[in-house]
Length: 254
Ligand code: NAP
Image 1 (cartoon, rainbow, N blue to C red):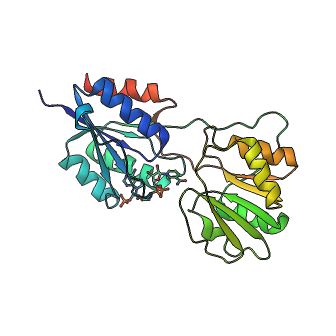
Image 2: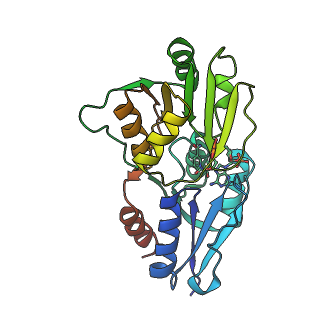
């Protein structure tokens, strides 16, 4: 019997968890292919013929490229488990799956809700957050990753502490790039913000628990927090959990 080929659009912890669990539980019936954009230099650890999982790396070449990939690779179903801010690939996945009539599931990471008593100012866009930094900050802790930094390039007379997982060249001079990988504790975050005399934290609503420590630390220090809201995902059948995605994948095979 030919195994069905299931594509996971990845780049997140959840995508890795889905891929590993799917390869283990559905590997006898399906080949699980994870696609990564190739943004990080660390090698993926998923390629394992024993568990029937594969990894491919790099862009497809827009909607046309993804459509071709789905056809050429005989993909039976697609799980979009990309990051909530990876709006382009999710849009492309919808278009390519619509075109090829391939079932598609969006794994929607639950929103993060602020604990009681923590006041957060929201921004709809990166440039709106930059305007708030210009208005209210002198030393801003920017934890938005390396994408979107250019929106802060025009902010004058504000120092930016920019934390990224891999080194990045900030597109402006009054900045320091701190390369650190999560998780972070609240105590560490507090010490870091005190050391750099931070007076504003800018983050994005990526969901998950990773955001929590720095927000609690900032709130404890009385530092205002600006959170950039996530873009709306394309209209999709969606689940919020890894188990939900696994169940859906099992249904596509059966
Ligand atoms: P994006 O803006 O939505 O996508 C830009 C282009 O990158 C896409 O058009 C596609 O190129 C390629 N691409 C993105 N994800 C891909 C994937 N999983 N497999 C193959 N190609 C992919 O994406 P992004 O925000 O740059 O994020 C890139 C990757 O990093 C995503 O996989 C995402 O899950 C992960 N990530 C993003 C963030 C974030 O904050 N944005 C945070 C953590 C992890 P083509 O058009 O050539 O196909």
